[in-house]
Length: 298
Image 1 (spheres, rainbow, N blue to C red):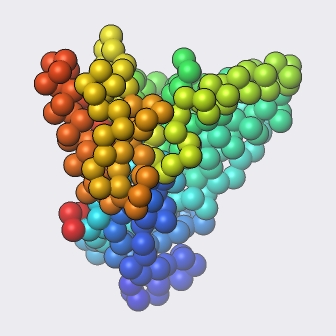
Image 2 (cartoon, helix red, strand yellow):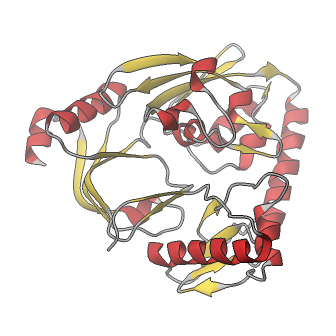
């Protein structure tokens, strides 16, 4: 850690940082070394340092669709929350990877730009949204994304056009090639602000009425199986309200697992496995996780 501070003195560095602070489930162990770059250059230098010294590097967004195991993460965790600038160029919006996609949708509203209304309730960061081609209510990030600035695993800066991002359902080349998103550009369309606001209000109301926002959770745990809905399959398997430790299949929406009583990551993972097994036995369908699980067992 001292060597890292000496070589990159402008970098914010912490040791043995509790990662539960940075996840929406409020679970997870510690990071050996936790760094917060405030520029693209510092992020690139961190990658180079990790590669040169053969130290494992994990990139952390805002932790919304993530479970970090109770043993934490070895090596360096690079937290990109500070790269959060949002700006406008005509009908385009350029947003840093650490910006919340909800904030980008609100920025678009203020600029009377339409196209990101569907994202007004997605809790993830811009980087995370590109990583998994996040979507909701019939829209997804690839619908409006035009290009992205990324770092490769060797610290090389790349500018990718939309077709190079190879976006599909909850996946993209960002994930496939282990790119680190720094910035994204969205092409939107001018529209009446009140029309945009009304659409966002409708989607917000729908989300709040259906989703268990009163508890910590990682959002939708499972991908939607072709021709089915994960929540409905879980409900039909009799699992709504089922609980292991402090983790519970939400009584409000069975597609969510909520932290109702100091749940651990182990509680979450054990419950996820139980849901997969039970649903498969009941329907023959194996649910695939949408949430990303990283870290070490305790």
